[in-house]
Amino acid sequence: MSDRRIKTRARRRIQVRYGEEKPVRIAFTEDVHREGIFLKTAQPLRPGTSLCLELTLPGQGIVSVQGQVQWARKVPANLIRVAKKGGMGIRILTITEGADIFERYCGGLDR
Image (cartoon, rainbow, N blue to C red; front, side, top):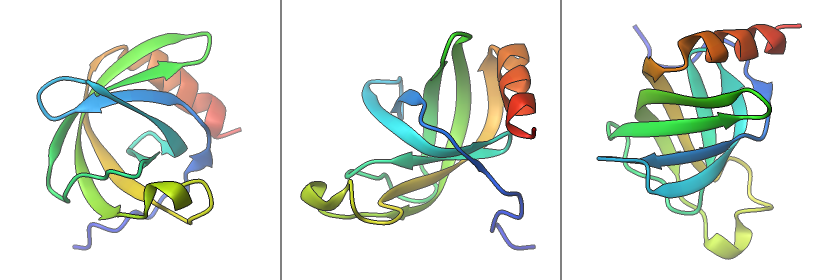
C-alpha cells in the first residue's frame, strides 16, 4: 500500500515547535489534517525521522504529537517564501497531549 496521502488538507498557518528528541526548532504549517501536516522550513529533516511536535492552536492551546517525516524538499532559505512545498510532510502517529483540542480544531476544518 502506498504511503501517499489521500485526504485533502486545509490550508492553515499554525506555529509548531519540533525536534527529534524535544521540540527546539520553530516553523509554521502550510496545511493541516487529522493525519498529518506540511511544515514549511528551509531545513527539512530526512524521511523516516521521528519527531516530537507542539502545535500552538490559535485560542485553543498547545497540542503535543509524535510524528514521522514522510517526505522532504529542501529549498534555499532565501527562496522559502516563494518556493512551492519547501519543507516536509509529516504523518501524525500519536497525540500525546491535547487530543480533544486537536479533534475539535480538525472538526472545524471540515466545514
